[in-house]
Image (cartoon, rainbow, N blue to C red):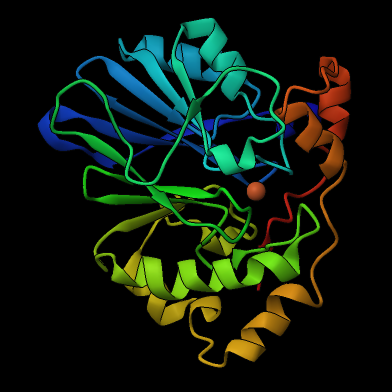
Length: 276
Ligand SMILES: [Fe+2]
């Protein structure tokens, strides 16, 4: 069970300009997804798990150096490998400042509109402030082709807003992000979320990815015209909160340093970041 929960499968999602590539790392046992964008020997890593060796080895295998590590939000369902990755590689570690108020280590604040570049100057990674799951939740538009949605929008569901106990406060932000901010983006962007919950969300090649336009057509959470109904759905009848989510948040803030066995134990169980 332990080995299964920690197993990551790297899959190529597609190409970026000038020979760059985008990879999705599927943590099948827990439903977590992380990403590596690569261009001319430089890589950016998004929402890495604590299994940092997998990313290091993969980067080595494609002759890339990890220059940037970015978390879409302060995670409550799994322990982020972001800080450790940055320490091991010398990469910059970016976090949304609104989620990082209690973080006790150095990080680079990820502001709306911030552009991070890797390798060839044509690959741009643009931060898009998209609160709702957490107050700092940030998405990324990569190479004008891909939209990394973090835990705001999944293939078959949407993000839950209550993992810091603030569902009532954040529901308006979630609505604004899904029904206004994302709605202004191109339907052709490929949505790449940070989780999946059911096997139906996987494509035939094993990737988890779908066009934004398809999600506006098929995803129930994007098709609730009645705002009151939407509010009820995302604040009432929520699934139980993930195992040890408060301790996981503390760990991701750097306030707790559990050993590996304890980290494993904290991550037992499904991710439970979605509502549908
Ligand atoms: Fe999350």
